[in-house]
Amino acid sequence: MESLGVLLLHPMNAYLEQELDRRFRLLRLWESPPDSRADFLRANASAIRAVVGNAGYNADAALIDALPSLEIVASFSVGIDRVDLAKCRERGIRVTNTPDVLTDDVADLAVGLAIAALRRIPQADRYVRAGLWKAKGDYTLTTRFSGKRVGILGLGRIGLAIAKRAEAFGCSISYHSRSEKPFPNYRFFTNVVDLAANCDVLVVACSLNAETHHIVSRKVMVALGPEGVLINIGRGAHVDEPELVSALLAKQLGAAGLDVFEHEPFAPEQLFGLDNVVLVPHIGSDTEETCMAMADLVLKNLEAHALNKPLLTPVI
Ligand code: DGY
Image 1 (cartoon, protein in one colour):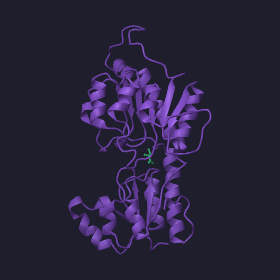
Image 2 (cartoon, protein in one colour):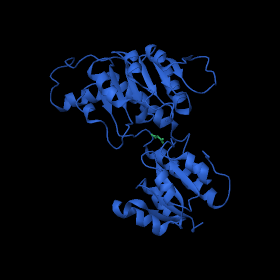
Image 3 (cartoon, protein in one colour):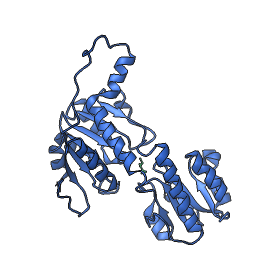
Image 4 (cartoon, protein in one colour):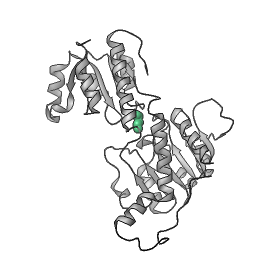
């Protein structure tokens, strides 16, 4: 097992790094400066049989091409849109991800962002810190989350967990999903614009692919409307960001709560000056508990691969 060379693409949680080091032959990509990475990869190409990346940077076409001995990509994420799956299929490279263990935390964050955006919690925090609070009741009135019409784009594991939480707040649920599975208590919309026109809070929870790229268009934002709130815990590229900035500025959309951005680790600067957005740095699964569970899944998948056993969470 020691002979499995694992390339870790970024510093991740300390436990994962330490255990990868202990159980395998670990190589850290970031330790070689960007301009000498190609040489580093060439020098270690025959040893690197596994890659561990995440939702930020993963095994893209260039990396896969540079690694002729690559056998497995174990992603520290549930979303594998940064892995070139077509190339992996072509080369017979196995891919694993970390589903289930992060579902609750991502769903919690979606509800948290919706409440933060509607109740203007970060803005209220800034108000207090700026010394603007002079008397009870002098801060602007906000809007409640309880009882709202919540629309969910993508009713997979995370979407369903968000629906369950929203139901506990007395919200009604509608959705658009590629899944054929019927959910009798929830209203299905074949069209995303219609879904947006029939909800107060639209949560993006689907996976990113060619069909869902920029699925939240200006039309969807306008349908959601000046009181509507857009929450994105999926991927930044689900939303047309320049249109989002423009819709928020034009007050065609009420507010947004965003965990993800199209060009991470950057969020569009035009959002920084807007008071009706809540921005967090892709932290959906970033709790101590979940990151430990994700790390264990990555480690177990790599061990299973090294021992030629079935993978725990295979994608392909
Ligand atoms: C993932 O793991 O794909 C998510 O982006 C976590 O937030």
